[in-house]
Amino acid sequence: MGVILEIFIHKKAPGLNKIISVLIILGGTILATNLLNESATINWTGLIWGILAAMAYTATLYSSNNIELNIPPLKRSLYMILGGLIIISLIFHTSLDPHFSFRIFWSWGLVLSLFGTILPPLLFTRGMPMTGMGLGAIIASVEIPVSVFMAHIFLKEPVSISQWAGVVLILLAVVMMNLKNEAPQLAN
Image (cartoon, rainbow, N blue to C red; front, side, top):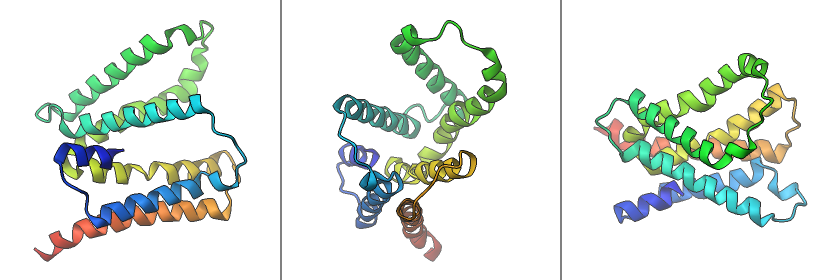
């Protein structure tokens, strides 16, 4: 979606390398998520929520790349996190558990909040203006291989050969896109 939004914003078609990278990433995602070997039916509610999540993620990429670039990344990240907290609190306030155990917070909450809530917006607000939204979205697709790898290592999830092939395809697409972007700079 980031590449598509970039097309509308800049009124310019993406290069062939970017299109090929996106197609390879989509194919790799299908393999890495084991979609071909699952016998599931489409849950339309889940599909709509997934599309809305992708749109929200794209909005995050856009805001990291374009809004208030003169403000330091730490402050921009704080505003993004607070905005997310407000939206989540407004939408999901009724589903919060009144019997929440703070032991979970102290054991895993701090680590998860650092790597899931604090560092991503900070790194996005710092890095996205340097990469651009389309390339940033392609680089962000590395999240899927990391998720598969971590689930295999820490949760002992079985990963099939086709899933590993999807992981490799995604990583190759990201490397290919970055090599193509680096080549002209090395010549100068």
